[in-house]
Length: 190
Image 1 (spheres, rainbow, N blue to C red):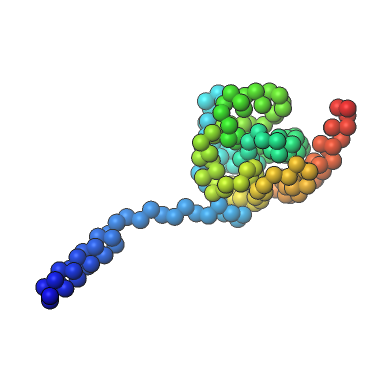
Image 2 (cartoon, helix red, strand yellow; image 1 turned 90 degrees about the vertical axis):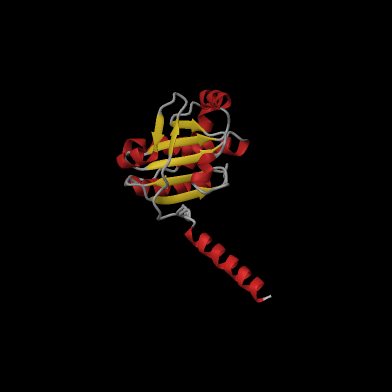
Protein backbone atom coordinates (compact mmCIF):
# COMPACT_ATOMS: atom_id res chain seq x y z
CA UNK A 1 0.00 0.00 0.00
CA UNK A 2 2.82 2.42 0.91
CA UNK A 3 4.64 1.42 -2.26
CA UNK A 4 1.50 2.12 -4.32
CA UNK A 5 1.22 5.53 -2.66
CA UNK A 6 4.87 6.35 -3.58
CA UNK A 7 4.31 5.24 -7.19
CA UNK A 8 1.16 7.38 -7.45
CA UNK A 9 2.92 10.36 -5.85
CA UNK A 10 5.91 9.90 -8.18
CA UNK A 11 3.57 9.87 -11.22
CA UNK A 12 1.88 13.09 -10.08
CA UNK A 13 5.25 14.80 -9.55
CA UNK A 14 6.51 13.67 -13.00
CA UNK A 15 3.31 14.84 -14.66
CA UNK A 16 3.43 18.23 -12.98
CA UNK A 17 7.11 18.68 -13.91
CA UNK A 18 6.49 17.71 -17.54
CA UNK A 19 3.45 20.01 -17.73
CA UNK A 20 5.44 22.88 -16.28
CA UNK A 21 8.17 22.39 -18.89
CA UNK A 22 5.76 22.47 -21.88
CA UNK A 23 6.17 25.73 -23.75
CA UNK A 24 3.13 27.93 -23.46
CA UNK A 25 1.82 29.79 -26.46
CA UNK A 26 1.65 33.50 -25.69
CA UNK A 27 -1.89 34.80 -25.55
CA UNK A 28 -2.85 37.07 -28.42
CA UNK A 29 -3.04 40.68 -27.34
CA UNK A 30 -6.61 41.84 -27.08
CA UNK A 31 -7.72 43.89 -30.07
CA UNK A 32 -9.33 46.98 -28.58
CA UNK A 33 -9.28 50.76 -28.74
CA UNK A 34 -5.85 51.97 -27.64
CA UNK A 35 -4.06 48.76 -28.56
CA UNK A 36 -1.70 48.29 -31.48
CA UNK A 37 -3.40 46.76 -34.50
CA UNK A 38 -2.44 43.12 -35.04
CA UNK A 39 -0.05 42.10 -37.78
CA UNK A 40 -2.19 41.72 -40.86
CA UNK A 41 -1.33 40.89 -44.46
CA UNK A 42 -3.75 39.78 -47.13
CA UNK A 43 -3.69 39.58 -50.93
CA UNK A 44 -6.03 41.63 -53.10
CA UNK A 45 -7.75 40.31 -56.24
CA UNK A 46 -4.65 40.95 -58.36
CA UNK A 47 -2.40 39.05 -55.94
CA UNK A 48 -0.79 42.16 -54.48
CA UNK A 49 -0.13 41.94 -50.73
CA UNK A 50 -1.93 44.51 -48.59
CA UNK A 51 0.20 44.96 -45.47
CA UNK A 52 -1.54 46.87 -42.67
CA UNK A 53 1.78 47.90 -41.09
CA UNK A 54 2.93 49.46 -44.38
CA UNK A 55 -0.35 51.29 -44.80
CA UNK A 56 -0.39 52.67 -41.26
CA UNK A 57 3.22 53.80 -41.63
CA UNK A 58 1.94 56.21 -44.30
CA UNK A 59 -1.26 57.36 -42.60
CA UNK A 60 -4.52 56.29 -40.97
CA UNK A 61 -6.43 53.25 -42.22
CA UNK A 62 -10.10 52.37 -42.13
CA UNK A 63 -10.35 48.57 -42.18
CA UNK A 64 -13.83 47.22 -42.85
CA UNK A 65 -14.52 43.49 -42.31
CA UNK A 66 -17.76 43.01 -44.23
CA UNK A 67 -19.88 41.02 -46.64
CA UNK A 68 -22.42 41.70 -49.34
CA UNK A 69 -25.53 40.92 -47.30
CA UNK A 70 -28.42 43.37 -47.57
CA UNK A 71 -27.51 45.26 -44.37
CA UNK A 72 -23.82 45.61 -45.23
CA UNK A 73 -24.82 46.50 -48.77
CA UNK A 74 -27.03 49.38 -47.55
CA UNK A 75 -24.26 50.57 -45.22
CA UNK A 76 -21.54 50.42 -47.89
CA UNK A 77 -22.50 53.79 -49.42
CA UNK A 78 -21.73 55.54 -46.12
CA UNK A 79 -18.28 53.98 -45.87
CA UNK A 80 -17.54 54.84 -49.48
CA UNK A 81 -18.53 58.42 -48.60
CA UNK A 82 -16.11 58.32 -45.62
CA UNK A 83 -13.37 57.11 -47.95
CA UNK A 84 -14.09 59.88 -50.49
CA UNK A 85 -14.34 62.57 -47.82
CA UNK A 86 -11.01 61.86 -46.15
CA UNK A 87 -8.73 60.18 -48.70
CA UNK A 88 -7.20 63.55 -49.62
CA UNK A 89 -6.35 63.96 -45.91
CA UNK A 90 -4.40 60.67 -46.01
CA UNK A 91 -7.01 58.04 -45.12
CA UNK A 92 -6.65 54.63 -46.78
CA UNK A 93 -9.75 52.43 -46.74
CA UNK A 94 -9.65 48.65 -47.10
CA UNK A 95 -12.72 46.43 -47.32
CA UNK A 96 -12.29 42.72 -46.59
CA UNK A 97 -15.23 40.67 -47.90
CA UNK A 98 -16.18 37.23 -46.61
CA UNK A 99 -17.40 35.88 -49.95
CA UNK A 100 -15.77 34.07 -52.86
CA UNK A 101 -13.78 36.12 -55.40
CA UNK A 102 -16.32 35.78 -58.20
CA UNK A 103 -19.20 37.18 -56.14
CA UNK A 104 -17.10 40.06 -54.81
CA UNK A 105 -15.75 40.94 -58.26
CA UNK A 106 -19.31 41.33 -59.58
CA UNK A 107 -20.40 43.22 -56.45
CA UNK A 108 -17.44 45.64 -56.69
CA UNK A 109 -18.34 46.49 -60.29
CA UNK A 110 -22.04 46.97 -59.48
CA UNK A 111 -21.28 49.24 -56.51
CA UNK A 112 -18.38 51.12 -58.13
CA UNK A 113 -16.31 50.37 -55.05
CA UNK A 114 -13.65 53.05 -54.85
CA UNK A 115 -11.38 51.69 -52.12
CA UNK A 116 -8.89 48.85 -51.73
CA UNK A 117 -10.62 45.53 -51.27
CA UNK A 118 -9.84 41.87 -50.82
CA UNK A 119 -11.66 38.63 -50.08
CA UNK A 120 -11.36 36.25 -47.17
CA UNK A 121 -13.97 33.50 -47.57
CA UNK A 122 -12.50 31.49 -44.68
CA UNK A 123 -12.89 34.44 -42.29
CA UNK A 124 -9.30 34.42 -41.04
CA UNK A 125 -9.34 38.23 -40.83
CA UNK A 126 -12.14 38.02 -38.28
CA UNK A 127 -9.93 35.72 -36.17
CA UNK A 128 -6.94 38.07 -36.42
CA UNK A 129 -9.10 41.00 -35.29
CA UNK A 130 -10.93 38.88 -32.69
CA UNK A 131 -14.44 39.65 -33.89
CA UNK A 132 -17.41 37.61 -34.97
CA UNK A 133 -19.56 40.62 -35.82
CA UNK A 134 -20.10 41.54 -39.41
CA UNK A 135 -19.40 44.20 -40.35
CA UNK A 136 -16.75 45.48 -37.99
CA UNK A 137 -14.85 48.66 -38.79
CA UNK A 138 -11.47 49.56 -37.33
CA UNK A 139 -9.97 53.03 -37.51
CA UNK A 140 -6.21 52.77 -37.08
CA UNK A 141 -4.11 55.90 -36.77
CA UNK A 142 -0.76 56.48 -38.43
CA UNK A 143 1.67 54.28 -36.53
CA UNK A 144 -0.79 51.46 -35.93
CA UNK A 145 -2.84 52.28 -32.82
CA UNK A 146 -6.56 51.45 -32.98
CA UNK A 147 -8.55 54.62 -32.24
CA UNK A 148 -12.09 53.45 -32.99
CA UNK A 149 -14.04 50.23 -33.50
CA UNK A 150 -17.59 50.12 -34.82
CA UNK A 151 -19.18 46.68 -34.81
CA UNK A 152 -22.53 45.79 -36.26
CA UNK A 153 -24.63 46.87 -39.17
CA UNK A 154 -26.51 50.16 -39.27
CA UNK A 155 -28.18 50.80 -42.64
CA UNK A 156 -29.54 54.13 -41.31
CA UNK A 157 -26.10 55.75 -41.53
CA UNK A 158 -25.94 56.98 -37.93
CA UNK A 159 -23.06 54.67 -37.01
CA UNK A 160 -21.15 55.78 -40.13
CA UNK A 161 -21.81 59.44 -39.29
CA UNK A 162 -20.26 59.02 -35.82
CA UNK A 163 -17.40 57.00 -37.29
CA UNK A 164 -16.83 59.76 -39.87
CA UNK A 165 -16.45 62.26 -37.02
CA UNK A 166 -13.74 60.08 -35.48
CA UNK A 167 -11.98 59.82 -38.84
CA UNK A 168 -12.10 63.62 -39.18
CA UNK A 169 -10.46 64.02 -35.79
CA UNK A 170 -7.82 61.41 -36.68
CA UNK A 171 -6.88 63.06 -39.99
CA UNK A 172 -7.30 66.57 -38.55
CA UNK A 173 -9.91 67.61 -41.10
CA UNK A 174 -13.39 69.13 -40.88
CA UNK A 175 -16.07 66.51 -40.20
CA UNK A 176 -18.22 65.50 -43.15
CA UNK A 177 -21.82 64.45 -42.53
CA UNK A 178 -21.68 61.28 -44.61
CA UNK A 179 -25.28 60.39 -43.76
CA UNK A 180 -26.48 63.65 -45.32
CA UNK A 181 -24.07 63.24 -48.24
CA UNK A 182 -25.43 59.77 -49.09
CA UNK A 183 -29.05 60.88 -48.69
CA UNK A 184 -28.36 63.83 -51.01
CA UNK A 185 -26.81 61.47 -53.57
CA UNK A 186 -29.89 59.23 -53.46
CA UNK A 187 -32.18 62.21 -54.13
CA UNK A 188 -30.06 63.31 -57.10
CA UNK A 189 -30.31 59.83 -58.68
CA UNK A 190 -34.11 59.93 -58.62
